[in-house]
Image (cartoon, rainbow over all chains, first blue to last red; front, side, top):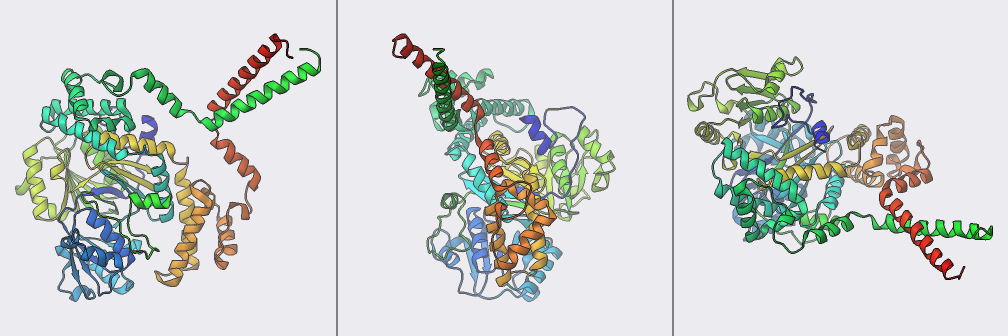
Length: 306
Length: 306
């Protein structure tokens, strides 16, 4: 698997010292997860697209200044009225005036416009580029320094699917496909492994160095050994203590079978095997086998050979 | 499916006018795809982590200034020597001096440090925050305005998986899981639907308005009807012309069975069915069926009933 991944999403590996370097294929975007807590963001527009932007910005704990004459999209109005979000939003009930406006784009970390006025969008984009503020103009890719793509969030897990603007709907379809194939409650597994990592950092603190490398290697092997589904068991504090005491302290990798838990190793093995079988194909094959053998025996019997 | 998606990655929908709004769950990152062509990026460090940053920045067509005394990681040195990438990189063969350096962080769109000197990293982070330049300090999350997470690229398709720093290895495992479940050659499908979208925009140009909405609705329905796998057939220019002539012009949605193509609908249906069968389970079941029936008949025969 790992070699196939490297052939596709191919940064130089951390441990390999081999001298073969994947070719650069330009034209990509740089995909990032921005931390926006309390950062000032300017949102120009008050329609449905602006309401989608607002949703993601609120989830990121940003402070959002909305410039748009009312009435706003009901979802935006709801967030302004709702006490749980109202303090994160400043609403200016008027049109944005571009260059002449007293609101200056350079006072914001990101600017997003979602308005029908193409001239004002263009002016805003130019302003932002002069001031080196990253801007997104809804539905006009050449005026965008960043795109949103299709998004998925399950607790601490967030996934962005970008098609570079070629197929917005395909991106959403890929998101749905990913969602179907993720283990259920994947968010609990991410939370579990996060708790184990935090406990480990308390025992082995510091940045970088030999200890940092050992910590990273141990976490990697523990993750691979337990897998995305069983990691959710690390939400159990006693289990975390046990694996750190008996595993980390002697730099050993203990798997689910090496620790006390709700099921013993052979019942787990059976459960795993049963879980991977395609029962439809198996039962279909069984039926075909019965039919095939019966037919063969019937023919043999007719021919008097049985 | 769609309601489940909305329960998870839940921005207000474009078409619904219902008055129920998903609750905001703060603490998320804002996931973005940045367009960095020719933009100046400052990369401080010359080791393996810096080499990974450089790889993604070169794929994004950015211009990268690297400050680090040599010798550099061989992969970085390779990119500096390679004529296909050398013009995108400026290398300053010396340590970064922080506040006293003649290189000023405000002249760059993003700053990334990947060095072992924690004090210099901290000073660089503070400098960037004073100048409102987004910064990433490798392995020190509190000094990061953005994270990278696990990345996947297949042609125009790019996917970012972020665990909010809780489980870097889990993110990579989810990337591998996604890769296993994507249709093979998904990049061709994205390219195909992108070509269809571009051809449609030539017939129905402009931003927004009634035509823009019709265009978006038609593309959405065509995407859903053809699906992620068959979209790759839109790389055929004649097929694109046919679906636009016979479909778009009369606002009809034509599926794979409504158009001339390399295979008729029933052979496609058989191919699809054969492709979804788990042959291991099927053959196993067949064997069990043969054995079961043979055994039953043997017993019947022994008992003299046949």
